[in-house]
Length: 285
Picture 1 (spheres, rainbow, N blue to C red):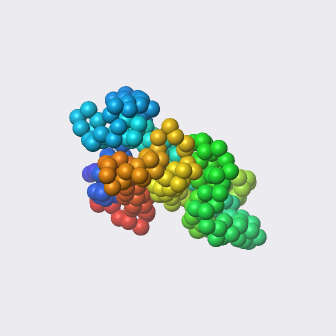
Picture 2 (cartoon, rainbow, N blue to C red; picture 1 turned 120 degrees about the vertical axis):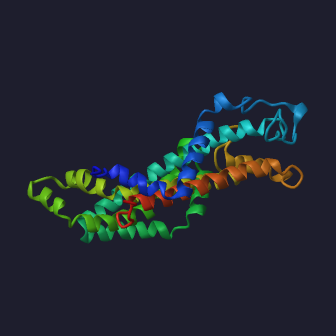
């Protein structure tokens, strides 16, 4: 008789049935290894200028060509990916942490606390995020940390609403009632009993938040309000190529494809994790 499967095995079985998510996971692992290992894989320094080889087309010497200053586009793509992925990951962590905390408190305490927190969340949602991001970015020093904080502080609302709904249903479960009867403090119940049981929506929201943060950072950098040159990001690489978009298309195509492929893979990963962590989705026996 086959031994019963663990929860981890069940989650993995459901995840690997989502072929697009599995392929996306492999692509993201390769991309992260290349980008975060850029000093080892990049053939040149990201700020190495060669004015004798400006705007060169792709070749064996420069796989993705060179830009206006003769800098290797492939090298800058890898270094830019490191910044863009770092912003995406940490901004999503900031947003998810805030959203999970607000949603858990609102869902657990309910009544007046729930009403105040959710009305505040709705007010923040009603504010157009991109114009506010542009205003904040223009009045702050555009460093990686500042961009991460700005994006994270303006991206937590969806997670808060999802977690609130999940906590509303979990807090009525028997194990929560038992913890209350044993005299556990509310903070302990939320941290040890409720949050671990709503990790599915939190993980999915955090995954999808990475892609959204990458798009926001790229948009800010494209508008000249993101990470300042010479530090490369995919967004400011697109900005630098505006003037040569029709004559030197490779300078636009490669960073654009990097953003497109990364965000698509993250979205497919989010779908796969949603199916894997959803208890209503059956796994193959």
